[in-house]
Amino acid sequence: MTDPKSSSKQYRALVLVLLTVVYGFNFIDRQIVGILAPFIQKDLGLTNTQLGLLIGLAFAAFYTGVAIPIAWLADRYNRVNILSISLAMWSGFTALTGLAGNFFQIGMARMGVGIGEAGGSPPSHSIISDLYGKEERASALGVYSMGIPLGIMSAYFATAFLMGSSGEDVDWRRIFVFLGLTGVALAVVVRLVLREPIRGAMEFKNHASIKQPPFKESLKSLLKIPAWWAMCFGIAFGSFVSYGFSAFQTKYLRLLDPSFDFQTLVIVLGIINGTTYAGGAFLGAKVADKWGSKNIRAYGWLPAIAIAICLPVAIMGFWVSSVWVHLGFTTFLLFFLGIYLGPSFAIAQTLAPINMRAMSTALFFFILNMVALGGGPTFAGWLIDVFKQSNGDLMSMRYAMTVTCLMFIPSIISFLIVSKVLPKDWDAAEKRNIKLAEG
Image (cartoon, rainbow, N blue to C red; front, side, top):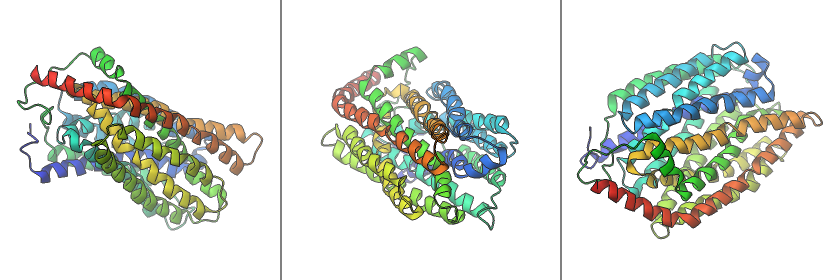
């Protein structure tokens, strides 16, 4: 094992970059279904509801169900091994997605991707927390969260590069196979480069062995922390809209202007995601650390403000008549969506006892993905089919996405609750960790 306090800053930075790249592959394999949705839907004859299930619930149910037992293992065993095996598994199933011939087969492949991705974030968050102290943890996790926009950007660019010469000539199967095999190669690099750090090295001076609590005790301990609970629902409801938005955005834009070049569209969306969303994630983490050093309530205030701005911007983006104007609204939306990631990840890790950090991330993602990833695309797809009974394709999508965007409201309320209860819970977390260190 490696003592991070004696490790070079270069190695620590290398670990953070590599984990961020792995997290990016996590989102490449999720986002690519939404990007290629019009072509997959046409090829396999899927309804909007089936497409929503494919992007959302079919993936999320297995992702969330497996994440908790994997996190239990990550709190006890080698996290680097768990991460590399998980990456190889979800990448393999991504490749198999390209071989599917019907809804059942592609659904099974996406379930396999979900099972593999469940072993991505819990060990990664835990490793980062053992390399960075609480004063810089939000910034480090903010960098890690940039894997989301960078992964999404890469998914768009890969589509543009592999789609063929015509916007109508898109071999979606080849894209899945290529991305899957690339991820398997990355898993080998992860296993060869990363070394397992000492647990609690940023908090414990003597690096003594940390007693691992039973599963039920971990669960009860985390669920008794009000700020942790409120943060989970805050990011879950915010991401509910984000996942619903991204699942049907390319289809919406093709309805808005069928003549708009699809290759140009995916390149522009890739650039927007890789710059504004990443910029929001990075800036949000930095502001949270700086503002939070003066007033700990900032970890709740900052996400609440950002999401309050997202609400009108997201709705207006679906009622414009131009693709380019929609992309302009999307630029502002993605910037403010990125802001709440770093503060939320920092809360999940800092409030959790040292010996429950992977479990904290797993439970956090269980709530996030069941509500957001499972609910957002599924709810939006179902609403589109409901409104389609009395409206045209474009108007049914506008109505459905407007209703979906209203889920930003409970997100704002949840983060305001975080700001109210966080000081007490933050102080209690420090006292718990001192007891663990003394033990």
